[in-house]
Image (cartoon, rainbow, N blue to C red; front, side, top):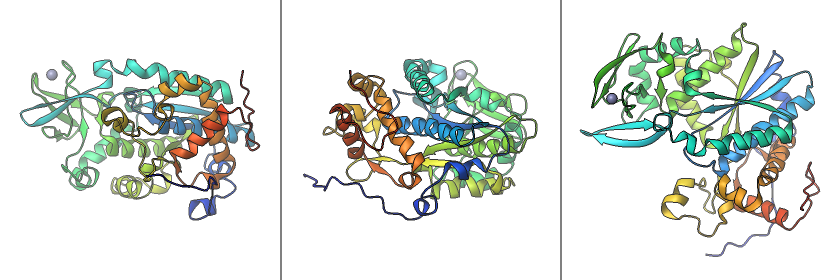
Length: 374
Ligand SMILES: [Zn+2]
């Protein structure tokens, strides 16, 4: 099938783009009463960052820069929350799925250099600093115990919401001897402040959530809830010197957050008006309007019509060098400058066109940075 298009980009206003047509940075800045502001982003580093991840990372730096330009006395930085507890390998024993995490298998190191390289590049480009935090450091925070304790108390209500498939509370701990963790929480038991986990090789082991919260691992909806409430508590904490917000992909916007974050936060009695601001980045879509999937590309040879540089960072760098990130940063700068461009999604062909313009050596009139080709 050949898809014809008129080669023009339209941006009709509606919903978010109508309300936030001309400004988003000032609106967000008003939420903070401290001088240090942190913009959090996250990823599971199980491969070279895919195109959507580059968009999220770049948008965080664009927003931070814009906020600093508007209020130069503020110190804005980016925080990369690394989901090193994400599954690296899964095995089934006696009908139960167990996983070893990226941290446990050490496979996190296969691609982590790409992430730091990108963060360093955006730092250089924007002058915005960044920090990296792993899950054990996140979980060491004093907020985690009261949050997880309340989630466990309310597990009969929360488990069917956060895990409609198995109706299990997906908080897990990896076996201290071999690293296996009960992926779906099938054999995991909760008893007050203790989590009783089961390893098919080493038997039962007990973790105290008050003193060993750094060992906790969650599936995505539970992590999203714990993180949201922890950020909210952090922002209210007089002892902290910074406040925090989040940027993530639009696939988490809407129904997902309403059902899996806001209502559950209310169930554990956290005042939802104190939850952190979350800004959603446009999705990168294929021709049919589906989110571009890196794993489909790798496993099933999908998107054979697309140039590989639109799939992940490694391919993009091979094609354009690290300066390819400039093209992306130019796009996300424009979204922050004109936020009506932020409350919509983009097809991959939109980005393809931008990269082609760059290849031709064209200078776009709307760009803040001028491309120079050697
Ligand atoms: Zn074990």
